[in-house]
Image 1: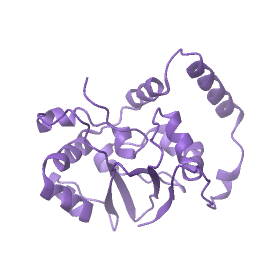
Image 2: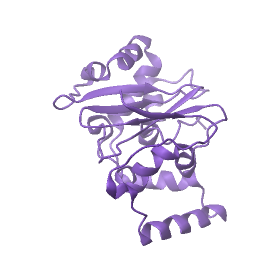
Image 3: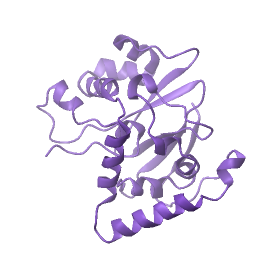
Image 4: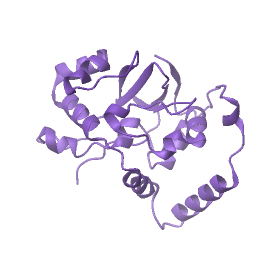
Amino acid sequence: MPTIGDHDHSHEDHERTFQPDEEDSLGYYAIAEMAVRELLIERGIFTADEFRRHLEVADHGNQALGAKVVARAWTDPDFKASLLRDGSVAVAEYDVEMLGHTRLYAVENTHDVHNVIVCTLCSCYPKPLLGLPPDWYKSRNYRARVAREPRKVLAEFGTFLPEGVTVRVHDSNADMRYLVLPMRPAGTEGYTVEQLEGLVTRDAMIGVTVVGAPV
């Protein structure tokens, strides 16, 4: 499985050669949007997580099936083992068929490792489980930066990982799709599968956020 690289707390950039258009500088409007957004976050108008949640709602991603798979993995050890062993086989129980020769790989977040997915060349994405990819996932900005400075990109989504947690960036392609299996949040021991499904977000299954504790 092509993993771009592990990133620990040293924040060192991982060398990666991108397609030519990814090496171009950001356009005027992209730079202006980032500057205004960062200024509003800095002044407390809204938080990075609130901005991320707004985008998630606006993008209308259909994440219901992916949430079912994650909640099942949290509550069924045998299914979890199957999912991590061969994602394509495991999700076939939900009548999900990966097209052509494409295989699905599930990567598990732990207290020591955080996974995030990207497609550096285009926008390969597990659509049968998560619906259409959000605009930011397809953007040149995300595709280029998340491999080189993943912690900085995650922080822009409101995700701040503890020191010592390794960040692994997984590069999707025509033959491979990835699904992040988030950590189950504390305080959900008595939750039903349906309640757990309601906690799982699309962005957590991409890896740019984590599943928060219930309130």
